[in-house]
Image (cartoon, rainbow, N blue to C red):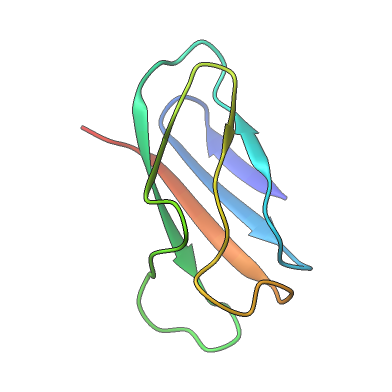
Length: 79
C-alpha cells in the first residue's frame, strides 16, 4: 500500500515485511528513507538504505529488523 504526493513524499505499508521498489517517475532528486514499526510505535528508524534516487524504479532497502513483519517506510524528498 502506498500513499503519495508524487515527487515529494511516499508512505509505504508493507504488511508482510520485505522490501519493494518505488517508481519515482522522472524525478532525479534524492529521497531519504526512514522506517516506522507499527507493532511497537516509537521513533523513526534507519534501515539498510538511507537514501535513494530516481528517475524510475528505486529500491528502498530493508527495515532495520524483523524483515518478515509489517513495517511502514517513509520516503521523503531531500531539500
